[in-house]
Amino acid sequence: MKGLPFLLGLCACGADPEPAPTTQIVEVASFPATPVGALDLVLQIDDSNGTADHQVSLANGILSLLDAVSWDGGLPSLHVGVVTSDLGTSGSLDPENPGPPVGAPGQGGCAGNGKNGASNSPETIIGPYLIHDEPPSLLLPNYRGSLTSVLGQLLRVGSTGCGFEQPLAATRRFFARNPLFVRPEASLAIIMLADEDDCSIRDPAFFSSDEAELGPLTSMRCTREGVECDESLTEVGAKTNCRARRDSRYVEDIDVSRTFFEALKARPDQLTVSAIVGPPAPVAIELRQINTQIVISLAHSCVRQPTGRVIAANPAVRIAELVGEFRSRGALTSVCDDDFSPQLAHIGMTIKRSLGIACIDAAALADGRAAPGVQPSCEARDVREDGTPTALPRCPAAPGVDCFELVADPRACPETAEHLRVVIRRTQPAAAGTRVEVDCEAPLPSTSG
Image (tube, rainbow, N blue to C red; front, side):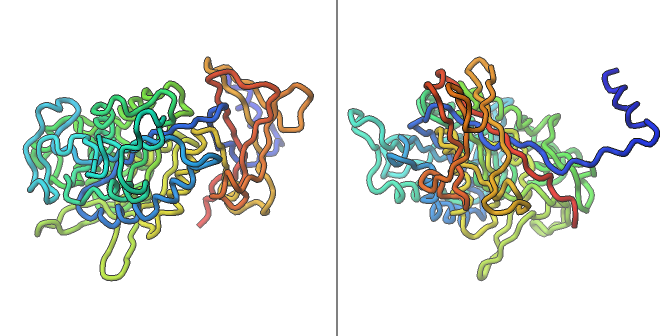
């Protein structure tokens, strides 16, 4: 009944139709009111066939990430863990009883629990993950060599792992194996690198069910069980409105991992989830030859052709949807770019907000539809630990009233053209556990061409 007056208004004789909206309000930042000096960083890396180039690009660009999260006194205190997507033929429904082996392990095949969420830990590191700049009394760091060189070793995990990648489930297993990795006082960042979508298995019967039910035992099974679109995924052609499937017997609902990740931190502003993956669209089904057979397959959503080879990625519909659920606390970028430095700088800016330094990209927010130098229209609020919000007016404000402003701060925000940083002018320190949320006006996405 609440909608009835509105409907009657639309039917009024001679009434002009309401103009279509041209803008939307989007969350651009959610960050702790009190800066955080520690960061726990997990890099989930696809180690299946064809991912070596991506790992090299990640290692070459990692300095951009470190630069982006540095501020004032330098890097925060770091924990860095690297885990691969290889969980063999195991499933979360019964992890102790994996499905039958597929192919030759070590050559792209899958068996047992695979690498089982274990950290990549080269000889230059003492322990399962890298520790940098904790109190000197702990005799740390726990690695030999420069931080960037050791990270470069960590990130090169090889490309012989299971071709049925389970990045979400493998990341959960990493945390289960390393209960001391997450520090209560630290922000937590998860970054995924993959050239295929998540195929976190629920029921290991996924690997033994016959073709009549699931089709050939290729990664297309992951798509059919993990994704749904408005059109059938068993027929060749373009697909629309593709999204993570929630009712599969064989592949997990992405909410299993979202809920797990959120529970790792006491407050939402302490967690960011980002990914460097294949764009989630376009999605299309094509015919492709695999092992002398012509089978239906998922078409690539991006392709790069450096000299002498082709580098491609499939649409990461599930991963993109998961990252999108974290709104301003997530960043999604393409794995098909040659240089990962810009993506890692963007992800680093997202992570830096969780440390209390909130930079915003005014140019990206305007989508090319605002004059350079024109500040976006934004509103901000404090949110106490119990969820109580208090609006923050734009500065200047009345005496004794906290307010916010957007200031050019190239030192804190070098990643963007305008260098805009959200600054809160306070009359007294914020209550413990308070976070700041910032929403800004942005153009609606263009529907033309």
